[in-house]
Image (cartoon, rainbow, N blue to C red; front, top):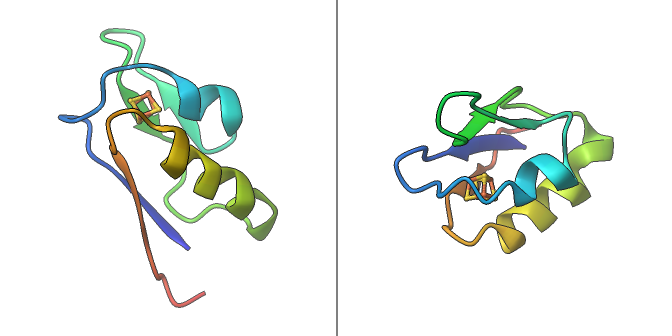
Length: 67
Ligand code: SF4
């Protein structure tokens, strides 16, 4: 799994940070998403997929990273 975020779309709702704090953080400046790791460990995959569904801005997307 490879994670991508579009900070231009992000509205800073923070659902991703609450759901997967190991993968997502929020900027202290404007609250937009900060991607901590583009290749999260397998145990985080379900949570990351939930973040994709929960994000109100469709700012998180997944790419098949070949792993
Ligand atoms: S859930 Fe979406 S809109 Fe909210 S902080 Fe995360 S990426 Fe941004």
